[in-house]
Length: 63
Figure 1: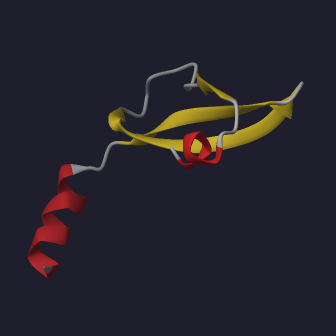
Figure 2: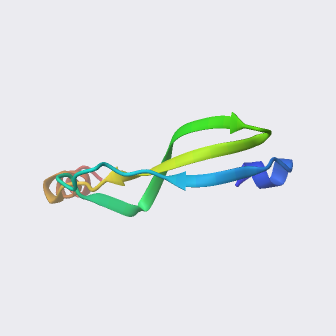
Figure 3: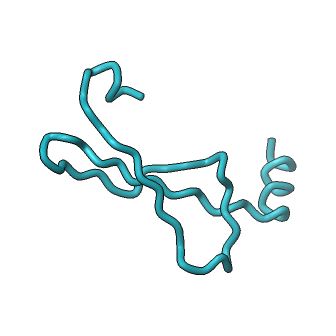
């Protein structure tokens, strides 16, 4: 992470929806929030929604 390179202290936290109606892709985390608590940055991650097969097929056709 760039924070490591800059020597900044941070903690990673994960969050998720209380329901699993929409499936997520655990290989695609993204930052949903950052905040500073007592000199340490807290970086909250969530996982991106999985792409539907029809969208993936549409992308293949365009390429």
